[in-house]
Length: 67
Image 1 (spheres, rainbow, N blue to C red):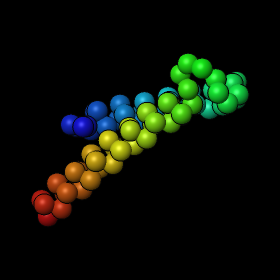
Image 2 (image 1 turned 180 degrees about the vertical axis):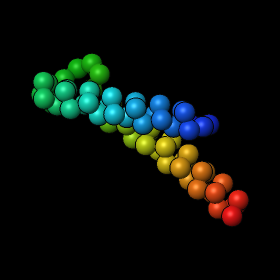
Image 3 (image 1 turned 120 degrees about the vertical axis):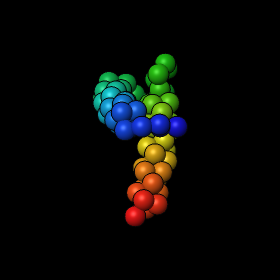
């Protein structure tokens, strides 16, 4: 879980790095390449997106409670 805005930004940066890595893998290696697989990177990106969504939802809830 993401506790604060700083960690939120770190996760966004990590998603960008993973997406760049995925793009490089797609260009350089055919399907079935062993090692750090494209599917594995996609799963990591999806997990980070889920964490960001939870954080964004909690921040919206906090703002709604304070109004």
